Length: 112
Image (tube, rainbow, N blue to C red; front, side, top):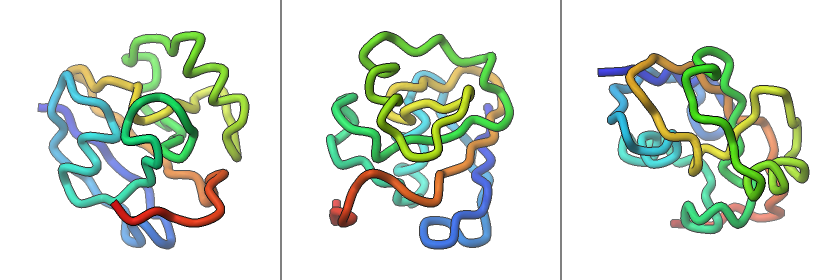
């Protein structure tokens, strides 16, 4: 089973974490299933950028982003060449390392 390593994030995951990921599920769903409360204001529907992550390792194992995701990523804070919306990036059989950016475009975090 693949693992997702989450780099430390001051508010969401201060110590970082490593979780067993379920292939076929998005990065976002895997994080949420392991109580890592990444923002996801649009409920995983590819309509915002609050679940933006930077894939530091394993990016090449993900399917390419589509045009809708790319259009939204253009608005994400801290965009990099390995940025993805975690609700759209589906885990395969490879390990991933992700960084949750320090900020999102949300002015207030929603309670899910």
